[in-house]
Image (tube, rainbow, N blue to C red; front, side):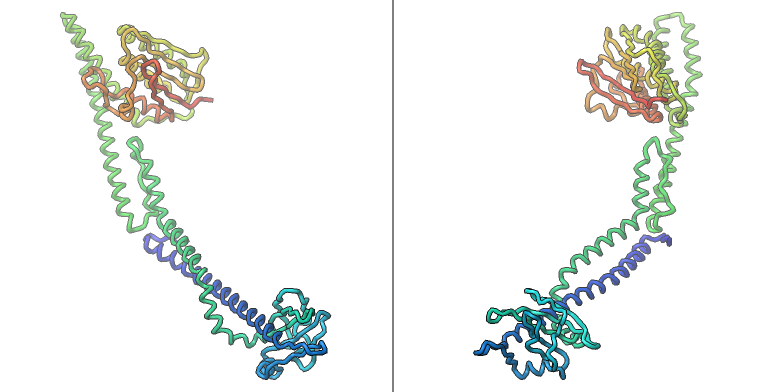
Length: 451
C-alpha cells in the first residue's frame, strides 16, 4: 500500500479515488433514471393512444361494432408508416379490428386481464412495446392493443428530458450525503496518525514520562510539532531524573552527618537537651528515609512471579509500630484470620506502604484511641483511626508529595501517603479513602491475589 508523508497528498489522493467511484456510480444512477423515465412516458403514451382508439368504436343499430378512425389516425397506424400498430380483440380472443392487412393481434400472448397490461414482443426483426387496455362497450369487454416499434422511440427524448429533471432531484441529496460520508472517511483515514499520537499522549503522566509520540506515520506538516513535543518530554524527563538523583544524593549525604550528630548527642551531660535533640534527629532521619524510598520507587519494578503474605506483613508492622503508639498513649489492634493471605507483590514494599499508613493514622488519632489493622481474604488491608477524618477539599491533595494538612506540625515532610500511592501504582493495587461513620478515617489497599 502506498504511504504518503504529506497529509495534503493523502487527502488529494483519497479525494481522487472518491471522485472516480462517484463518477462511476453517478452515470449508472442517471442511466437508470433516464431508462425509467423513458419507459414511463412510453407506457403512458401507449395507454393514452389505446384510449383514443377506443373512443372511435361505434355501436351500430344492429348491435355490431365499427371502428371509425380519422384519416390521420389511419395513416399513423398504417403498415406503410410502420411505427405504430393496433388491434381490438373480444373476450374470446377474436380479432375484430387490426392495423395489419391480416386480422392479427399485436400481442398474441395477451392474457387480457381486467387491468391495463404493458407488453413487449417481437414481430419479425422488430421489437415492439405497448399496452393492452380493457374497454367495456354495451356490456361487452374488448381489449385495445396498441404498440410502437422501439426503433422509433428516440422521438420521445424531448419529453424524456422534461420529465427526467423532475425525477432526478430526489437522487441529488443521497449523492451529496454519500460524498459527505466519503469525505468523513477520507479525513479520518488521513488524520489517523494524529489520533493515534493523541491516544499515546494521554498515557504520559508524571510517573510515565518515558513515553514518546510516534513519528514514523506522522504527516510532514505535523512532524515538526510532534518532534518538538518529544524534545520537550526529553528535557522534562531529564529534569525529573535530575530531581530524583538530587533527592537521593542529598538523602545519602545526610545519613552520615545525622549518624555523627546522634553519637555526639549521646555524649551530652544535659539529658533534657539530649532528648529534645534526639527527637529532632529522629524526625530528620525519617524524612531522609522517605526521600530515599521515593527515589527507589521511581525506578522500582515488581517481579510478576513475586508473592507476599499480607497477613504476615500486617502482623510485623503492627508489632513494629506498637511501641510508637504506646508511647503516645494509643493502642494497636489487628483483625485478621490466622491463615496466610497471598497477594502478588514485593513484601518489603508492601510493608513500607502499610507502615506509612499506620504511622499516618497514629499521628492523627487522639490519645486513648485505637489504630486498627483489618486484613481480609480478598487481598485488602485497611488501616482505621479515630481522628478528625478527611475533609472533601483535602482528597485531591492527599497523596501529593510534600503536601501537609498542617504545615506547622513538626516531624512530617508530607511524603508518607505519596509513598503509599507509588507502591500501590507499581503493584497495580487500588486505594480507597473514606470517613468512618463513628469518626476517623479508613485507608484501604487492595492487591491482586496470588495463586
